[in-house]
Length: 147
Ligand SMILES: [Zn+2]
Image (cartoon, rainbow, N blue to C red; front, side):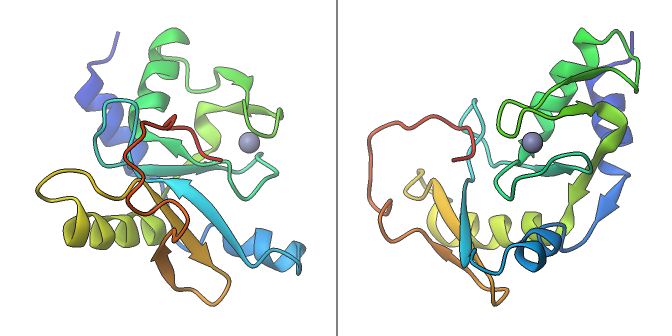
């Protein structure tokens, strides 16, 4: 069984940029999507997308994929149903979303370095990212899944 740090390295090596662009292109009515920037351990989300996913808000955290990889006993072709879009997706179809990761890091450093104040951001069609105005200051714990 691979060590978690080796799995992380392997997953992070498959990178892509602007992975959300295809959803905006296919759906002219979408102006933005929201994502949680914390994972289930309240750490900064390390965002991944899967090629087979069909919804703009299908974003996974690195640690979640590491868990799936372990459940799949190191099989890179291990498949499961996406709990957002319900498509069958495999570990090998994931790509690290560098564009989103950089934006999450910026917002995190500006707002969350001494305690988490921002959990939800919006990726806008025009390429900008902003703190979700409706979720700002919301201290109630909300599920880390994408919405
Ligand atoms: Zn999906």
